[in-house]
Structure formats: structure tokens, C-alpha cells
Length: 528
Image (cartoon, rainbow, N blue to C red; front, side, top):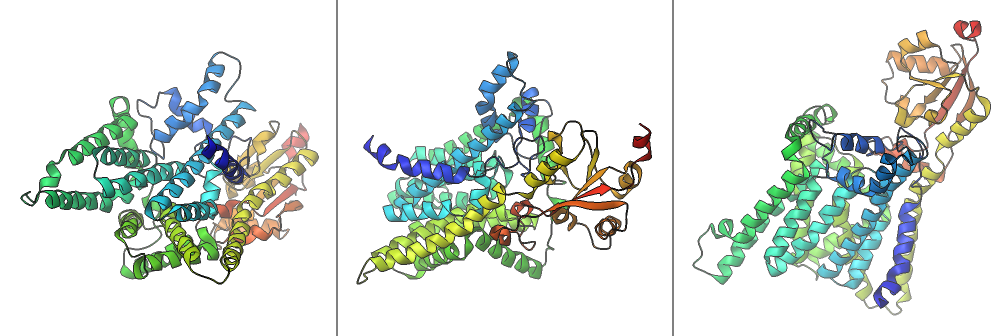
């Protein structure tokens, strides 16, 4: 209880820090966070009990987790007290799903603290956890209901058992490592790549352990050891249950077909040549630096170098890099594209090296300890300022101002069009009397909406010589029947985080919006 009272305030501060901006784009039926697991997606699965031929972009396990948190609201809905598909309760469910990410984010921070403590000392654990809490991509994904934080939760949890396996070689650690790793894979498929090389390393380590205790043991002793085959059996059972093979094997196969075809192949950005892989690798390093910022990148790099050439050259730190290397070889090089969020597990490992660097730095003998504290304070303040940018972009997203202007100035029966996917647009569904349409060149010529919303961040996706882009330029240059009535782009200091050379969903925050009004009224609408 004394421990709980001592650290409770720390966890409250961390929970508050990770929750800032959690209401971004809520309430709304179309989530502003791309690939977010929305209430509609979860309830669609619940409607079929995740059976038959149900499948989605991601495996079902985190859908089960969110469903468990939805349970009180779903029961109330069944009893007729609330309508979970209508506002405000749909928005409440969105908050609930995001709070699950916050809770899992706190769990990850705790796991990283325990890992740093086990690998080095208490200072290393605190420093590693602090680095992670100030990592930009980690902060963004704890505020939304994507599956990235959940699969990182299970991955980081598995690392605790991996440490114990190397130390004790106990059956329970093997089994729990397998369970946690499987749940990571059943949350987001790409997690499989984290465990390929470590799995072979465990077999090698187990064989060496058996050989040490019994020099007469044959070369395949590890494969027959109950620690290995019981873990394999447990992994298989957990995987089958998580994917609901008994009632949804067809849906599982549909999911596999999707992720190996339309879900990945069209997005490949790099070729398979050596030069293409080199360019992709360099961009990957840039994405990792983007997540950390220069201050934390410097700390983690120092820790990584020190672990191999300094006094802390020990096997307990050497095995850490197996996971990122395995992940890069068996996932990134296979799909040949690399978003910032893909490197969250790499950031977990690097944070541990950063913890090593800070712990070692604090052990150095200076004339006064205040010098060390001052250096860490400067680096920490820089990291806080850098990461706070994500909160600023969420809290001051330009779509809020656009929605307010539409509410105050646009007639309830006006016909509004938007030239983007719904998740990049202002929440026009909050205005039920407005018709909405996704615009193409053809629909512009036929529908002629009274108002037109343009998102110039989104429009940059079009080729400059495309018909659509040329048409948007005509609108902007006043060469059509539309005139600009409102534009919004909050000039925030955090806008430097939006970088088109960085493949991140953070680029979609605080977009440059323009609202145009048709100067010539639609003849049909005038007749009405």
C-alpha cells in the first residue's frame, strides 16, 4: 500500500499526459484517425458473433477486448435504455475504445520500467519508461483506438518472460512468452515478424542449457524438451481460439487472403533491388528519429553504442536487437513500405538502451551532481516540447473552426460537398440537414453543391497533371462559379511535425481547409 501511495500520483500524471487530445474528432461517425477500430466495426463483428465469414483489416482479438469494455453499454442498448448507434452514445463508445489504448499505454510504460530494472537497475527502468512516455508516435497512438498500442502491449509483456527464460529456463516463462507473443500476433498480424529470429534463438539457448547440464544430450534434445513442445501446443491453441477457427475459419482465410493481397501489395513503395532496400532503410532511420526527436535519439544511440563497446557489454542487452532485426527482415523488407507507426516496437527496444545511457551517466563522478541533472533536464524539456506538439495539433485541429463556421453561416438545407474521404473532412454528419457527397470531377459537374470543402493536405495526393488536381486549382484561382468564403489553417508551432517526407498519420492533423460557396444558385434548388 505504501508503494501504491508513493507512485499513484505518477500514474495519474502519466494517464493525464496520454489522455490529452483523446476527444479529437469525437463525436463523429467517421473517425479522423485513419484505420481506427471504430464502434461500428466492433458492433458489426458482434452482430455476427465474429463468426460465419466475418473478417476485417486486423485480427479479431482486440475487437474482443473492446467488446468487453462495451458490454455495459451494449446491455443497456438491448434493454432499450440507450441507442448505441446514435449520438451521444456512439461518441461515448468511441471514448471507451480510446481509453483502452490509454490503459494499455500505461501498461507498456510499466512493462518497460520493469524491463529496464531487470536488465540494469531501477534508474535504468525509470529512464527507459520516461523516454517511451515522451516518444511522439507512442503518444499519438495512445490517444486513438488503432491496434498499434494493443499489439505493442502484448509484445512488451512477452519481453518480460523472455528475460526470465534466459535467466531461469522455467516452463511457465516459455509458455507465457508464447501466449503473450501469440496475442500480439492475433492483435496485429505484422507482430509475427518480431518473433521469428528470437524463436530460433530460444531453441539454441535451450539446447545449450540442456547440453550444459547433460553433456551426453544429443543435438536435437531441445526439440523434444517439454518446455518447447508445450509452448508450441499452447501457442497453437491460443491462436485457434483467438481467431475463432471453430466458427469463423472461412473468415480467417478471407483475412489471410486480404492481408497478403489487397491489404499490402498495392502499397509497396520500393523495389526489390539492393539500392531500393538501402533507400528504404535510410528512411526507416529517419522515421525512428522522427518518433523520438533529436534529444531522445541522441540518448538512445549513446546507450546502444555503450552497451557494445563500454563497460556494460553484456549478453542481457545484446539479445534485445534480435526483435527489431527479425521484425525488419521478415516484415518491412517483405512489404517494402515503412510507416512511422511500424517502428513502435523498435522504439520500445531503443528506449531500453536510452535507459541504460541515462543510468550510466548518473553513475559518472562529477564535481557536483547538479551538472548531470541540468543536462538531463535540458534534454527532457526539449523532448517534452517536441512531443507536446501532437497534443497541440489535436486540440487545435482546423476542422473544429470549419465546423463552427458552417454551423453559424450555412443554411440547414444547403448542399455541401467535400473533395476527400470522410475521415479527412470536417464532421458534416453532425449537421443532419445537410446532404453530403464525396466529390469527383464528374460529380462536380452534375451535383453542383452549394458549398464545397477542400482539404489541400489531402489534395496533394493527386498528381499535379491529373484532371482532378487541375480542377481544384481552377476553383482556387477563381476560374469557376465558386468563391472562397472561409479558410482555416491554424498556424501552430507544432506544424513542423507535419512533414510530407515522413509517412505518418500525424500529417493528417490540422489540415489546410478552404470552404467555397457557389455564386450561381442551382436551378433546381431555385425552382424548389
